[in-house]
Amino acid sequence: MAPASSPPRAFALSDKVKDEVHKQDVWTVFSPASGYVPEDSINLGQGFMNWAPPEYIQEAAKKSIEAIETNHYSIPKGRIRLRQAISKHYCEWISISFGLSSPSFKRTINPDTEIVVTSGANEGIYAFELAFLRDGDEVILFEPFFDQYICNTTFNGGVPVYVPLHPPAHSKHTSVKASEWKIDFDEVRAAITPKTKAIFVNTPHNPIGKVFDTEELLKIGKIAEEFNLIILADEVYDALVFNKEHIRIAALGNLWERTITIGSAGKSFSATGWRVGWAIGPQHLVQPTLAATTRIVFCTNSPLQEAVAVGLEKAPEHKFFEQQTAEYLERRKVFTAALDKVGLPYTMPDGSYFVLVDNSSIQIPDDFVIPDIVNQGRPRDWIVSWFIVQTAGVVCIPPSDFYSPKHIPIGEQFSRFAFCKDIDTIRAAGERLLALKPYIKK
Ligand SMILES: Cc1ncc(COP(=O)(O)O)c(C=O)c1O
Image 1 (tube, rainbow, N blue to C red):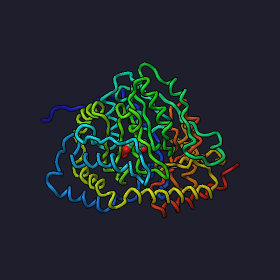
Image 2 (image 1 turned 90 degrees about the horizontal axis):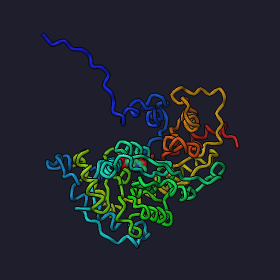
Image 3 (image 1 turned 180 degrees about the horizontal axis):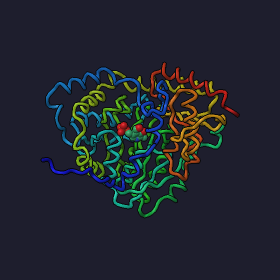
Image 4 (image 1 turned 90 degrees about the vertical axis):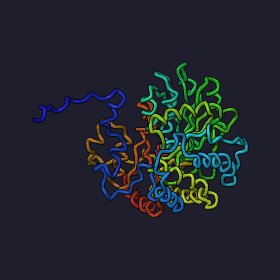
């Protein structure tokens, strides 16, 4: 006879995860898969492309799957071919990118000690924080932030400390440049305490599209040196910079010694589901990050590491990055022209594939029904973004989820659109957005 069994009592959740489990965040609500958004919506919400990586990279992936060795574990720091390709890419490609020069960045990157391959950029950031944060250590985050930064920090005992980027005052009325969003460096200094351990710089920036200039990066670097902070440079959109030079903070002055730079094959090669990324920096930052990543995933999937290596190796002969940037520029042009036609001001991005649209002029009619899932005391951008989705059938994201509660008033005048979709889809989205015109009151 089977022993008597009783159903388990509820299992208590860890303090770290308990608030995450039933969270109705932007990704849950503003997704065509959620059931809340009309099925035939055009999804410019979450930032993933509607095309696959180039054929020669896919071929390399298929070949790797067919081979024996590449179906098995790799060493935790990543496959040598990929690390060598990353080293070459960062040392050479960036200094000749698009005819622009980065003359200060002359050093070589040791593929054995200064690079670790990670399971996407996000896991690299998590591993870095696991390696370096002690309970109560503070991490300075500029707002709006990539939302994973928060749990990456708190799950590892850290405390996020927020400093907002400020849009220019006229952004409510006219389109502005991403470079007009500014850091108040007095606010940065005021945020630093004896517990501050690290400062994150995301350039090109999600969702503003700001590409930080040398002066700004040097100011951040100076503060990092003064207070002995580690700089985490999240540069996952470094291959998507428009008519500007992408400056690597690690390449300025002596900042290499205190900077870990994060990259993503997902963003660079339109392979967000492949989960291949990397962290680059001096041995004293990379080796502890490697120790942490070894305990999290042991290693990143082997076949796709090989395919990404091929992507980096062959990029110059295919002029891959130059062509990709030209295509994104065209998408940016078509999408922002559509916004001009609709009459909504926006921040023109210098990099990444996001556009922040100022939604302050949209007036929602009194009889518009807002469901509870959106209306539970949420900030204004949730309601307006929801109205946009329902009225135009184009999904966008309310960026207040990328702000601490104190600074939500800065972000809630915007809705974020991702233009990493083919040009026909972007055109179609632009046409649909014209449905907003009657609700725009100047
Ligand atoms: C700023 C930023 N950092 C990191 C990531 C994560 O990249 P990955 O998909 O390689 O983990 C993203 C993805 O959206 C991002 O926007």
